[in-house]
Image 1 (cartoon, helix red, strand yellow):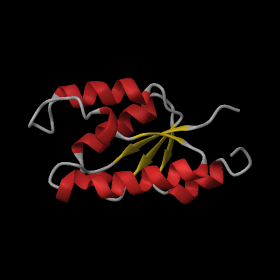
Image 2 (cartoon, helix red, strand yellow):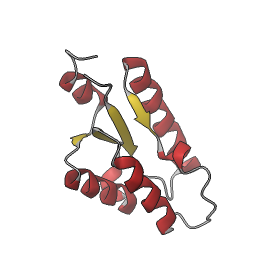
Image 3 (cartoon, one colour):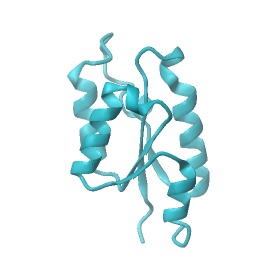
Image 4 (cartoon, one colour):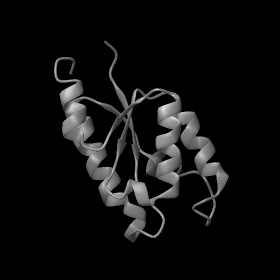
Length: 112
């Protein structure tokens, strides 16, 4: 089996330091477990816009989501318009949808 690719989604706008700590903590844990990770704080770094709802961010996110097998929704995702859209796209793309790393580990416990 190929390595699962996990997209991290969660609240960014209005969060201290754009919630980077939560995104990078999840990325670090997932990488340590053997997952390949897509963190928007990394793949959107080159987008120059002061508007967090700029469509450029969503376009890049959708492009990256098409490469993924699963999405991890961080705490507070339901209160984030962007994370809600990413979750809806994950449903459309038939990705595994998880709200905890433990549930992801359980799904892949025999494969990693």
